Length: 113
Length: 114
Picture 1 (tube, rainbow over the protein chains, first blue to last red):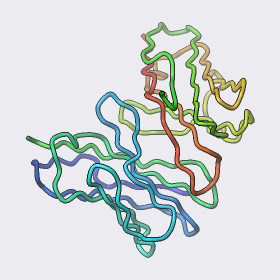
Picture 2: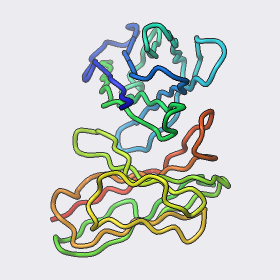
Picture 3: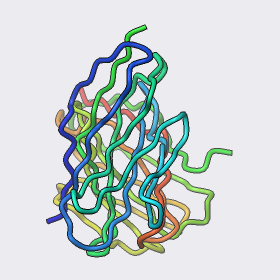
Picture 4: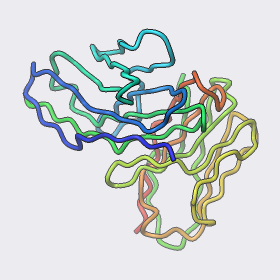
């Protein structure tokens, strides 16, 4: 069955530090990949998505992600985090095998001012 | 205009009660979903409807019954509420249940069963 793994469950960074959150999926066919952010008490918002084309995807709020097909990975990056980036981050995938969204377990990011 | 709206935002109720959560989307999407987010923030799909037809029904207790009167609405009815039903329930919609489409989420309904 398809699955998504986020290995970093909790990340604590100081402001201006660089961020990389890992996301790996298990599926050999065509995939769409997403990163969503959930600020405290709020709904899920789309940060960025990959459907096809350039594997380096730029999203909102200075985030980017790189799709590495050979590694089944879609890691999220930001060169310099801000206190306001404190949130829960979810990686998700849809596949050509099943079109439903499959979410990772989430990474809780805390940025210290 | 809120694209995907859920009501109520908060719901506190006693064990054994029956309650409903409503979801409406004004995006013209064909596919709608219900997700449950537990206390550990894990998001799990419960149901999916495509043009009022049920297409995904994960292993959810029979006490949960989705109803889609039209493709813009997907309501969730829960019978005989239990403590373990306490969670945040998210509704989402998507143009269609296919690749190359993204889902839009509602603001969530925090259900607390006491």
